[in-house]
Length: 286
Image 1 (cartoon, helix red, strand yellow):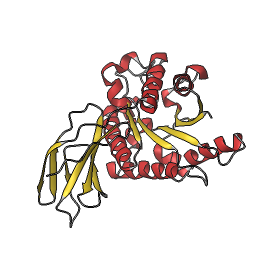
Image 2 (tube, rainbow, N blue to C red):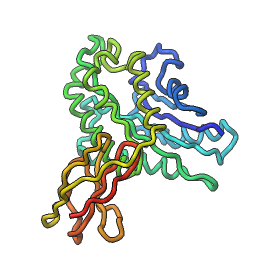
Image 3 (spheres, rainbow, N blue to C red):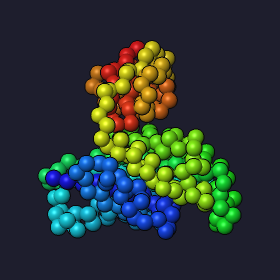
Image 4 (cartoon, helix red, strand yellow):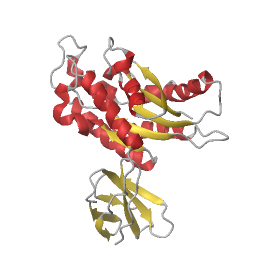
């Protein structure tokens, strides 16, 4: 049985004249053995508009309709959204918590795709790459992109946090592209060129296929009142930490840093590191 993969994202990262065979979803199919990749790329898409238009849900439903199989097992959903947040006018006035709430709702949509026969698809959240240093003079309102990479960096951190909460894989294109973004984008400074498309596909394919050992646990966990801190795991692919109840291991909170605030009523907890593939370390205790 072919591995069904549905990619959802925006066309902001793809030049309008780029042949479909050179776009990252098509390249992904060539990198993941025995897979069938469907893509739903929508112009100017942001997380909130994807939610309002129910386009993630409809993309998954359409794959099943076209296969004439409403019990079709969709193994993976890849979501690369957020490029629109590079524009200052698209960043919510309420700030990071509002962006987090949008991504959380999107995660829930994918989790709700469980069928009578199959479990839900495995979600991979992919944070968008940074904007190049040179923007085309003809780009509409380039002033709106001032501070773009600071916002996209914030978005990547929020994406990682929601991957922790939603038990999703995470691919951080912002970090992976940051040092050489100008070699990976076209003249507009935003859409990815052939090399950029290939790198996106390669990083996502690696996340889907690489089997890793669990990360090393954090160390030196300390609790002071409601504050908990620790020394970071030495493993390189750690995206954050799960802070769990010491007795039943329910998740109390998550952190992409090395400290967190415990909820009221909890003064004992353990910490586990989690990597980008979803592997979790042994617990570290105070």
